Image (cartoon, rainbow, N blue to C red; front, side, top):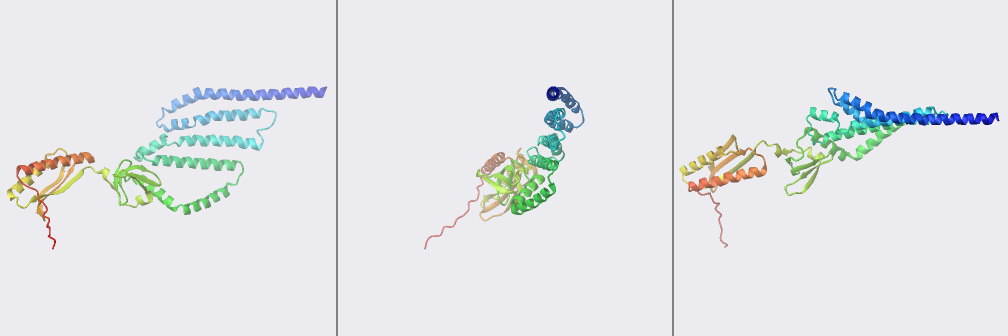
Length: 353
């Protein structure tokens, strides 16, 4: 009878401990909601008053991990109240520490997002364009490093020998590097293009390999839309070694051609034509006035050569063409006013013998 009573008392005591463990876990869940709704928001509100927004960014990155942390701690404390010494077993201890490591790692992983204020500050300091892929690349590299560190720390927590793993990764990385030399060359070529910024998306570039509008800049290759509407993908290892002309960086656009006047034109008319054309260009609103040449150049093969060299203020191709067309029409009017004809090439036609 005494044995039965002791058994009942033991059973009741165990049930009480189970209920206590459940109650503790529920309390932590409730406090988690209270912490998230009031305390955490209050802390974030105070952090926004600090000089740097990085603190706020860091807190928001750890918001979700902190919520999960209350669940992990609640479960651990609940296990401590159970009649079984579960928390002192190696498996539970390693599992608890692993959860803490994962939560810390996930917080830093979120913080290293490409939209983080950290990278916004970096882009602002080094004047990196918003559409540059350098920031997403750095973000991905940092996230990869965080994942690698978390994996190594977890393996060490569970007693694995990480020295052999690191050595193996080193040898494997060397083998991969040797097998992917071209890919690595393209990768570093992309780094050179991104850091030196010889062009950006939307720029009109010309190289010995391709000419067109840059559509995309990747770490392996750059995509260029040619003026025939074809899409050319150029490996960065080639593009980074070539001379690159960025026509979009022009501050003004050149117009130059030779006007050939017939040899039977009197000198006075030729001079008047030169002066009127020069006055036309000097007084045109679309022409840059810093530098221009309108001069009788030489005695050409078919007539007198008048050399014209000047720049338009606009660099837009269609606007440049419109100005060039307008000036050409007005030059025709000047020649008509002076009754001056353009030189026509003389083609000798030999009779068949």
